[in-house]
Length: 183
Image (cartoon, rainbow, N blue to C red; front, side, top):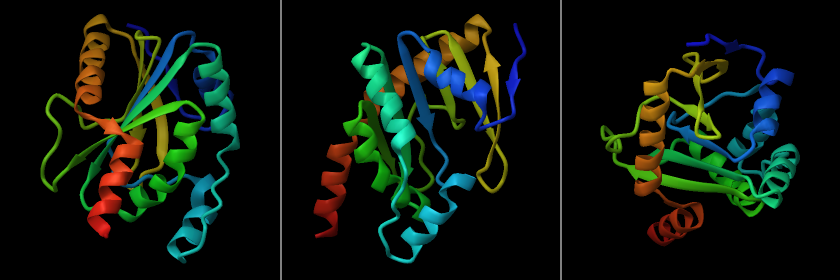
């Protein structure tokens, strides 16, 4: 098993993973709070009740490029209800990302519950073979990503991806359900 760790995130090596896959990229997001330096100002505006003006240009350009080339980008976001402040902030960005080709789906769970056959760690799966487990600190800052290329580990993550996708609903459906609940 190769041991490869990327700790410069964002950085060129990390960007190469997001730009270099040839068939598919899948992301599982399960934490209820993340902290990224490039989101500080937008999150502050969101907290103040303002338009967060999140700059998604890099991501939406990337998603369009991949989907136009026939590559698939997808993610499943596990949301513990009611959504955390950070998750509500993310929900502002998701429709824009989805419109660009990032197939975003949601699994909504009650507090203290977790979806069956879905791990509690975040990861990226590229081309159904390269698993990158994401390592966060207590504040939700992404500190590193570690390649897990052992055959059984890859099979486990493929199975977990499939289980997450089977339980998830499209972001638009999730937002429609939450809007109906709020009215």
